[in-house]
Image (tube, rainbow, N blue to C red; front, side):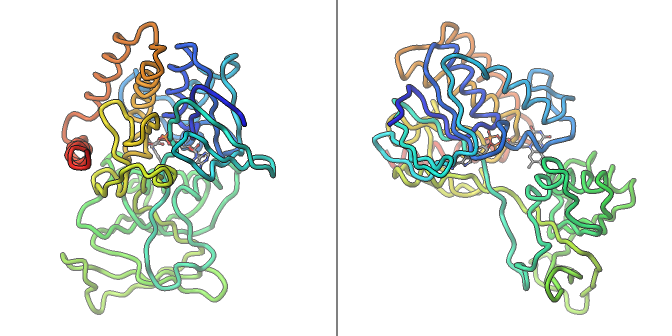
Length: 364
Ligand SMILES: Cc1cc2nc3c(=O)[nH]c(=O)nc-3n(C[C@H](O)[C@H](O)[C@H](O)COP(=O)(O)OP(=O)(O)OC[C@H]3O[C@@H](n4cnc5c(N)ncnc54)[C@H](O)[C@@H]3O)c2cc1C
């Protein structure tokens, strides 16, 4: 059995930032990640990020990943297992890990679950035909492995991810025939939508996919118009020739490991769906098991980093080995998080967090 002060499951931005605070506090840390490389979602992001300088605005996602990895890698108190999947988590703070065809057991004084999110999917006829991808899968193929996933594609969903991945598809030489959005408004930032439109990609609202058509793989997509109750408007069917369909209809927090330890969960749509309830110090209802980043609410890399730093700090105090600059840093990162969640774009998250607090009070 491997023994550590802290086991971090997930080496995305939130896990890496938590690790940096814990290492600075003199604790022994292990990061376990199932990916080929550390960095989580960031390693697929070829675009420059928005936001403020403190969260690496105007830097490309994969370059942010490099900065965060450099902050911790080669630290004498850090051990990293890559291509290692945590399969089981137990209340006595033991994790079972599948690594190089073996099962390892890791026991830690505290565990931070920073497993990010998974893609939501859509129910429609023939949605299992080869050629139907989630936007994250398309990004992995193109940006991580250099594989062109299609020649002609249609994007379902106009949130920021749908818009950004559509642009990246164009950059890879793929014709994006249209972006289709079921609601009456484009979900993502106007700047991303305008860029696509300037490049000749139509964005249709009040429409959805009804069916994928093809014998052994996608050959066409049937698109229909919707009324304001999201019902099909008869006679609006349109067939579009494509060899792939990309689905980008949101992300769902990866809470499953926390369910295994019986952490209390709540369904909070504003945070992306089912999440483990955490307190102000990011501890779940299971003593010593913490969570941060997209796994407890879908936001952005900027907030995942701030949550990661804070969770690392809180855990250092929980283990009676508080970071030397604990108070100053907690104040700094809490302030940054508050700023990120301020304004109209943060209203959904603020509501979600308020609901989480109420749910937590109810279960206690
Ligand atoms: C297309 C796209 C564009 C984006 N653009 C922006 C942007 O412009 N600005 C911005 O701020 N944010 C952006 N984001 C969001 C940002 O990437 C995420 O919010 C952020 O990566 C979340 O960080 P995280 O550490 O919580 O999770 P992730 O980055 O998802 O990392 C989770 C890690 O956990 C690992 N893992 C999961 N389960 C297990 C397991 N059982 N065992 C071992 N390892 C496991 C995964 O391999 C992964 O490395 C974008 C996201 C996407 C998809």
